Image (tube, rainbow, N blue to C red; front, side):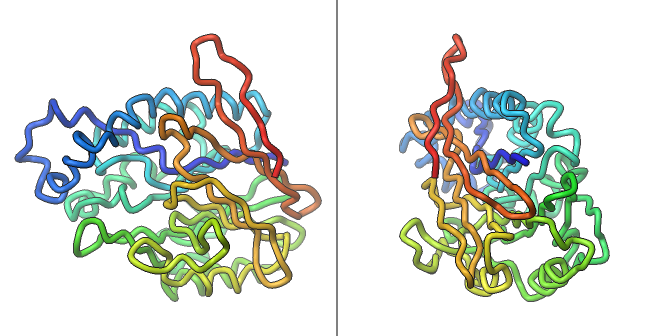
Length: 296
């Protein structure tokens, strides 16, 4: 079986054309980085890049596409719609696509109250085993073929202060995940657990501080061995840590659409185990040049 994993695609509106007052003060604070720091320019082709990754999923005959959060820059309706459009028919079908929110998708209290992420992607949060839900729709379980299951968690929380983007899963979701891992109906399936925030850094250290995952160690303890993988984003670096006897594979997708650093993971599952992954770069010119590949 084959899975595409991308993250942090950050579809970004043209903020220069938007009236400033309706944006709210949280987005005002983001404008210097977006407009003066070059972030908006770095994601100017994000929609095209995401569409290219979706086309790659078809090319590789992937069983499932996974996007581990941060679909938007600042959780505007137009940004969510652009992400939905870029995913195309894959984004319509929960049998083929899993999407979870990142911290940028819950950027303001208004976006959370309006359930803006759920309005555009709630159909992808339905669970094949809803009895394991513990916090709202999480964790949800997606059965993929006969050899794998995708488990969605939510670590994205509205911060009191913008810029402090630390995540946490919480006891309830972790209890639900433990029940999923122990469920005899899932015996023989690889479990690909999707969460936005990174449990570990690219160096293999616990991701702590204002950008880490507060309960990352607890998450990894629940998932020992090569049956399990954690697929995440948030840290804009692409890396893989091999599974051990006490922890899972970890695949960090980085920012899949950041100009000059585009890419995603092609992850292989065989006989109920995650067997590895290949970093890929989607074709980024109009001629459709074949993507590059590196085996990990």
